[in-house]
Image 1 (cartoon, helix red, strand yellow):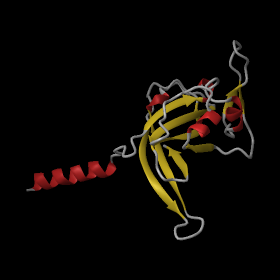
Image 2 (cartoon, helix red, strand yellow):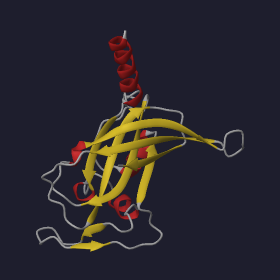
Image 3 (cartoon, rainbow, N blue to C red):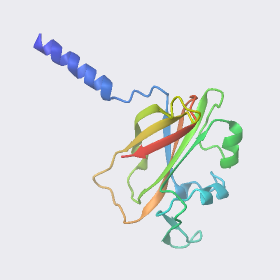
Image 4 (cartoon, rainbow, N blue to C red):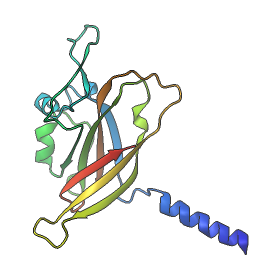
Length: 183
């Protein structure tokens, strides 16, 4: 009886702690420096993160990172794209396929230490819909995404933070916005 009870408890814990991907989400990560020619230049410039470092060297020159300090720019950015027209306002070329009939795109951006770590190891550990101001005229719903980054023990990190983007394609949901955290 005890082994059976133990097995039931372990299965329950595994089910409760696993993400499960109930919104059919896929994640594509890119560094800021990889998005020139993919995202429109004005979008990249307007969505810089305060405290992140950006390479100011011209093409072919040695890298020269300078800290971006703008007290009006946040340390994180998120955007929810629900239509092809919104997508076309931001993208110059198709980075990822999104069928806006039944899918949407969440764009999340943060700064992190520049390293040679395989940043594709960023994954979603949790997603949920969060309600705010329920039973008021300001009622809204948001998608909360919690990212988990798996680090390599052999990572060669520097002491500068660079901007990274996560593009999440998922089922179209009835939400007003997206929020996220990275751990």
